[in-house]
Image (cartoon, rainbow, N blue to C red):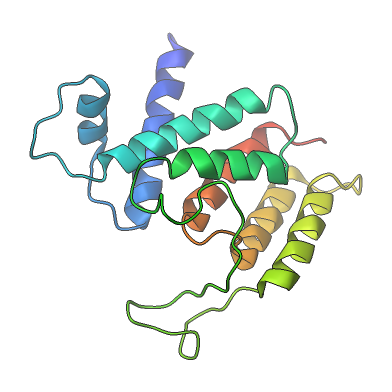
Length: 180
């Protein structure tokens, strides 16, 4: 590659856009680039700030991984950055949930949810087991470990909002900074 930094710059933004679109956001990569260049038009999608926060959370995580391993502390930090000053910012950014959550179509309840993550008490124990798994010395191919860790994180669903995006942020962190 003639300029790997430019590739990484664009890759992170493309990943942020696609990951956010999974969550229903409408902003495009071009919207994000215009926003970052401060050339954004007034009619731009409002959720471009959320995509910009994803980029900032990715970069925060990469910087922090120079000092500490993938950990619950890091997960809380990137979650806090991801939800700063955007939709969901009232949902305790950077803090693990203290109430039951569930996944389902709009209007669903705990009783008819598609998926119900573990209750708060079990969630705490599950997070501890998840973190121990990340640093377990048992040999395992990186791709398998990353896949299992991602699936476990999404199943635990430790935040009131932003779990999918945080889980997708963890994939490159775990891949790049695996201990094997």
